[in-house]
Amino acid sequence: MIHVADAMTYPVVETFHSVQGEGYWSGANAFFIRLGGCDVHCSWCDTKASWPIEHHPRQTIAQLVAAATSATPFMVVITGGEPLMHDLFPLSAALQAQGLRVHLETSGAHQFSGVFDWVTLSPKTFKPPHQSTYAHANELKIVVQNTTDLVWAETQANLVPQDTIKYLQPEWEALGKQGDHGILVEYILGHPQWRVSLQTHKIIGVR
Ligand code: SF4
Image 1 (cartoon, protein in one colour):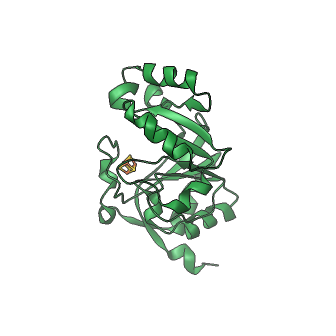
Image 2 (spheres, helix red, strand yellow):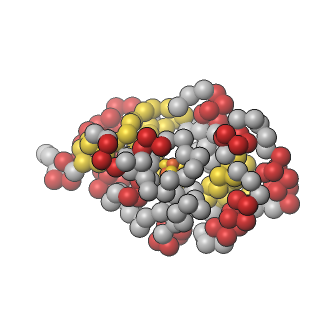
């Protein structure tokens, strides 16, 4: 039987099956759904093509669920762009209804929506999170270019639940590519609530 929600569409930049590169689930088998649209506009964004919401072909929930199910991943990651520009309840619920584990990666810049098994909140100074997002964060991931970002990290850490796992991740062009993790390591040695997250998918050469 076809449900009305199955016909609902989202702009999709790409879907692909790979390995989660970052954070707590680094190394896990994951099917990615990259939704179009982002108004956060980070200067160092590596997915700028995702920004215009209207430039991406739309796919139905039924199509996305079928693609994710056929990949038989350990988990599905809804990412962007900024996925919270869309109402994620219908898509996340449809994926979970098929027994899939569903994760969200978001900057939190818009009202929270959806049902998830894991939420990665990665707040950006360019457009800070909507208040509704902080309570959902299972992990907090702050991209670090310089020491100013460490101040931002602490302000954001004060807004998430106490048991949220906290990561500092070197920005790839400024630090990560060069393997220059000195700022982070020095900081973490003095602030044990933080851990390092690396973009391991870039290191091992997968998407
Ligand atoms: Fe790029 Fe993500 Fe920043 Fe949007 S929030 S500009 S997709 S890094």
